[in-house]
Figure 1: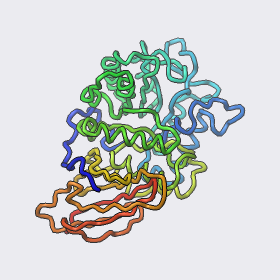
Figure 2 (figure 1 turned 180 degrees about the vertical axis):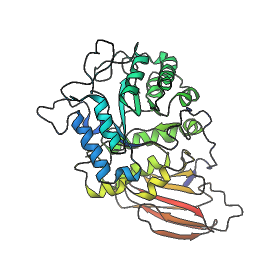
Figure 3 (figure 1 turned 90 degrees about the vertical axis):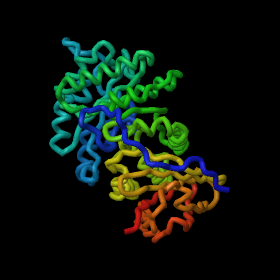
Figure 4 (figure 1 turned 180 degrees about the horizontal axis):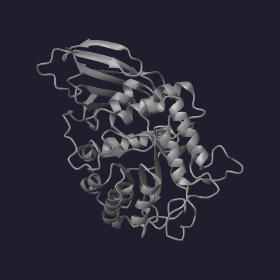
Length: 406
């Protein structure tokens, strides 16, 4: 039996966005953390340790394998890049053995390839990996990043008091803007407050951050992906109104091409991050990724939906007893729907829907053209009163574009 949860309506644009001209669509790029973690053993594992060579390799792959041209532009360092001590002037400095040429030289290398460099810090005394944090050094760290040519800064929240973040993160926003360099600001602020039981002021966060983490770190597993999807569906009425050009909810990294997801599960993660208009920051090894996963990440039709200028956050609109859910995202000129099969047993499961049941505005509309975004198949011309059945594989998804027929 089909149970309607919510009739989907047009979403308002975000009116609280950080006004620094950045992240007008969800940021796209690559980030080290989920795949490479805090591996600093360059002696025994030189290809996979956190070093300037790793980020140079990924920048090269992003250019040569088509990721840059598809829209992926940021190469992001995460934790464990710095020395354990600041320099004599109190500035952060890169580990001299793993980054012998310094972060400025790495930024130059990345910029020459038409890409942007991101880095990582922490609002607390220490980063999560035990490296120097920015507490008491916010202004000098912001200026240091600008001097190096940094284009994105992720500020974590380990070893910090979440109750002080409503003041601390906006301070960093001010200091970043004062540098005069456009630096996209990625915040972990709401995740730490949520975990501490603090009511999150998303209006304030959207005014100060270009993107923000809401929930747990993603792990290399389907259970982790599904847990994030569940949280976003549960909180959709809170998260949707504050999202739009300049400010995006961040469900964490894309793990497509790693070890934990099957091909169908990889499609499902990409589809759901597209429904949420989420940042597309891959964390994988672009040097060894299998061709079928690379093709998923480079799907032009899906990327175009993710990057739709409206930035609207899609919502769950239907649940079916057989573990099937339907999500719909409203865009400027069309809609996109995802049919997600949460089940992991047996054959594919069918879901039969009408466009009226998905909450689409059918009054005065003669019909819709429907396309499968992964296969490119044309589902046909469907009238508002007709229904259509989709076959969804276990732990998989069907993602369709729905446009009003001309």
